[in-house]
Image 1 (tube, rainbow, N blue to C red):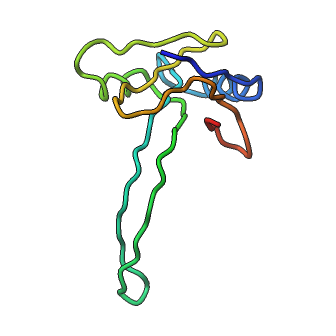
Image 2 (cartoon, rainbow, N blue to C red; image 1 turned 45 degrees about the vertical axis):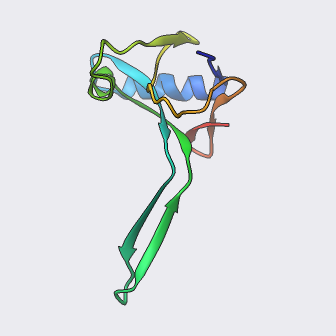
Length: 111
């Protein structure tokens, strides 16, 4: 698997989140969110369509989160910048080759 680069800003923020985490084993979860369409009702009862573009989601969570996603075997983690990362195994996810995990405008992002 091609691994993304992690910026210093992202690593600093992740370390802060790890130190604030009450979990026994915090990890950085990197999950591919597939495109989706949903609908809701507007204030006058009209149908409002919502399109979600495909994107990578990065957040700090407990290792048990990974276990819930990957029941086939023990989830594998990868160390990057001395931090434990878990990349959700989704077959249709694009490669992370050449991508960067960064901390921009208060959010961990893949760009």
